[in-house]
Length: 204
Ligand SMILES: Cc1cc2nc3c(=O)[nH]c(=O)nc-3n(C[C@H](O)[C@H](O)[C@H](O)COP(=O)(O)O)c2cc1C
Image: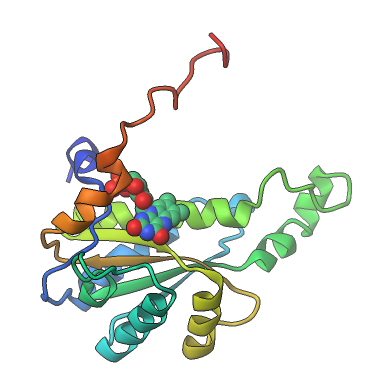
């Protein structure tokens, strides 16, 4: 699909049809992480792909227990998605990379003062790859943050190592109508900002 065709289709979809997604399709989607940029080529992004129904149900249960992913009057979100991808980052990859000889030679012999946490920037880039790749495959995707207690429960249940941070949960599947969610999503209730992009000088 051409980018200009794909872009208008990009939105969070929070309900999916009960149709499977093939292993090959999932592999193509998650394989895009290898094309995502990463600071210093640290490649700190990690994805945990969960497809087995019982495991997905476990994530849905943990997230619902945190109380907000599927309120009663909306379509089931997490439990309807054929694929869950936990997008994670390993911060230590960045410290390890930026204390290698070539980096230290550029930065006066010590690790840089991080202007922003590049490990989260890169996780965001990986998220975007997944969201767009899913659409390219004729599917849809959604994204939810994973609140602290839920993240810790998922960590314990799925063996996520202590040095890996869970950044977000991306859901992927065959789209189904999600009018309940669409009615409340801020995207429908708020206009897009007009001042996101500025030119030449902040105040013009
Ligand atoms: C970091 C991040 C966290 C988000 N967390 C949630 C969430 O917890 N629940 C949810 O319904 N949507 C979540 N979203 C989706 C946003 O609400 C959504 O992107 C925004 O309303 C714009 O809608 P659109 O993506 O459909 O254009 C999140 C998006 C991002 C980027």
